[in-house]
Amino acid sequence: VFHAAAVSDFSVAALYRRDSEGRMEPISGRKIPTRDGSLWAELTPTPKILPKLRSWYPHAWIVGWKYEMDGDRADAVARGRDQLRSCATDGCVVNGLAYGPGFGFVSSTESDIAGCAHCPDEDALFGLLGSFPRRPRRSA
Image 1: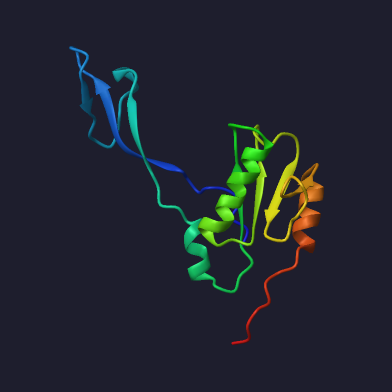
Image 2: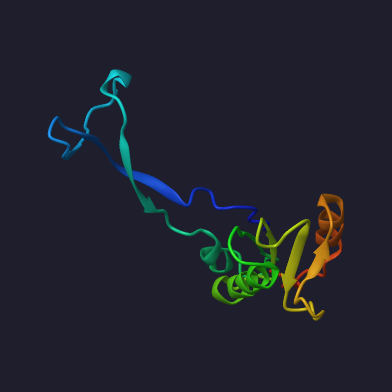
């Protein structure tokens, strides 16, 4: 199972507009006219799917993804390692501004100084994912 990204990190819980005194008032109805002007949205976190996958597919090889914008490469790799532990995954692809150019693949088998295998581009990442040893499957 390759869980490439969050399906949606947030969902809209409520919409608001400012009334004539500047107070926020909830909006109801199915159609919101654009002439009403700007709206404000209240977002709530959606349930995480990745932590549930191990119980749904106990013998699967599960890889998550961490797209990180803040910090540096070491921070991105550390967040990938945290994902391995908290979600019981076999690997985690890390990328984004924090990681820098390319992709990292964090797993319990990687032991280089950075704590992950670096892939300079998508082809290298796909090659690594295609050759990574899977969990042995149990026979039914």
